[in-house]
Structure formats: structure tokens, C-alpha cells
Image 1 (cartoon, rainbow, N blue to C red):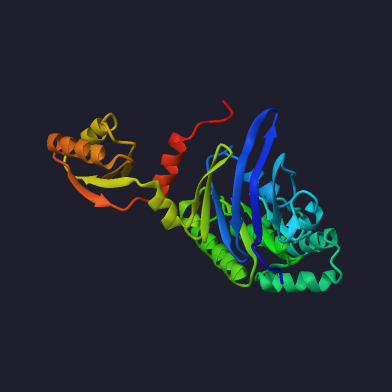
Image 2: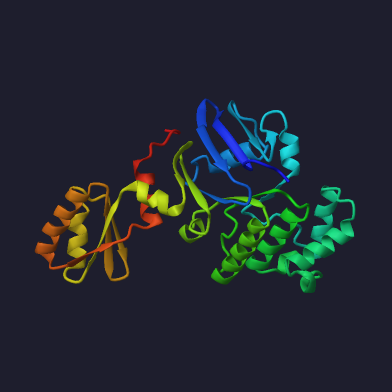
Length: 308
């Protein structure tokens, strides 16, 4: 069994066309940990993941993944990785079983028939094995994709926005499956825009324009953001929203049903502005917990686009 962290990288840097896409990223991921990557589109999440799983070589930096050097042993890393992309990429005119047989051939598995049968049973696909992949719902396509990714028993699973377009029940079942695999020692890197999915990860990293600007458990990331959140209700809510949008100390104003969530990094200025607006509009004010989404939006707003 592998000892030490599953992933340990230092100062990973990668540029394309003179633009630094990944900028000195360092992190460690433990064996059996589910690590979530958050960040806006184009932030460098996917490139960072590809550097760590051996698909790209860094311009600078060093590290080991699954015990292998990320520069000199990339082929060994790739053999131990399962990569599930966002887009369904199997032959839709083949059955589930035929698709898995094809994948088993690509991996040159020694007993392909047994591997396919075991994987079908493992993912609850046996009764659907003769169904054409193109006729599957989003949730079952996702299950097929996961089956193909783990059939060769990888030590590291990469998930790139795995549940886009999948209904809530299928998403929950998918995450239950991922947690069960992690408990058996599988390390998981998942890129997602869904806050509830990020909260299912053991730790998360927020990447913004190539830089890792937040890292830790969800509670740690929210706490370190040091934001203050208030909820406003009743009174002239629309008028309050218009006034708050221009007030000092207010970084975010977002409607949630019949309330407004007001967020800011300067607690004193935020409370003063909210008190002033409340007196003018008759709204009620109550404290609230800062959410991961609040932090996500805040980090996006203060980041500088390195592609400009």
C-alpha cells in the first residue's frame, strides 16, 4: 500500500502563449481524501488537475503523485488514474456492456470478461447491460462513465464537473458512491461549480486565474474569508436593495425569496450602512451565517483576470 500523501506538489506553474495559467500552486492531498476544486471558468482548475495526473508537464515546480515523480514518471501516474470528463464520451449506439468491453480492451485488462461483469455488478448496471448507451438518462450515463473510469482499479479518480445536467436524486446517489470509494482508499479530485457538492468534499481549494487563493475544509475557508452576512426582510425591500447596492461596506446584495442577503468584508461599515437603510425603508435586519456561495462570489469579485 502506498505511504505518504497521494498528492504532494510544490509551486506548479504552467504557461501557454506567454500567459501563466497555473501560478505556483502548492498542495497536499491525503490518500482517500475527496478534494474539491472551485473557481470561475478559465481559472486554471482543469490545467492544474492535468498537471497532477500526468497529462501535462509543468514549466516549473515539482511533486509526487501516487508515489511517482510528476516530471519523470508521468506514464506511471496515468496508469493509476481514472478521468471522468463532463461530456458523455461513449459510443451511444453500443450497449452498456459493449462500451465497457471496449474500455477493458483499451486498458488491456487480463480478464476482460470478468472485469466487465464485476464492474456491471459493482455499479448496479447488470440488469441494464444490454441497453444502448444513447437511450440512457443523464444519471445512468453518469453511472456508466464512472464504471468505465474505475474498472481498472485506479488509485486516483479525477472528476471534471461530473454531475452537470443530472437530477438531484442521481447526484446524491453519485456522491454516496464516491464517498464509499474514498473510504476504501480511493483519492478523488473533483472540479465543480455546485456549492452543495463542494460541501461534500473533505477539503476544497479555490483557484482564481491560476492562483490557489483558498484551501482547507469548507468551515476553514468560510471562516478565513472573514465576511459578515445580514438578512433583510419586510418593509420596502426593493428600495432597500437599491440603496444598499451603492452603500459603503456592502460587497454583495442578493435576493433569496422574500429576503435580501447582504455581505461585506468590513463589518463595521456594513452594519452602519444597513442600519441607515433600515431606518429609511422600514426593513428588519437579522444576522446570518456566511455561506460558501458568499465566499465564492467574494473571491471572484476581488480576483484579477490574468488573461486581460
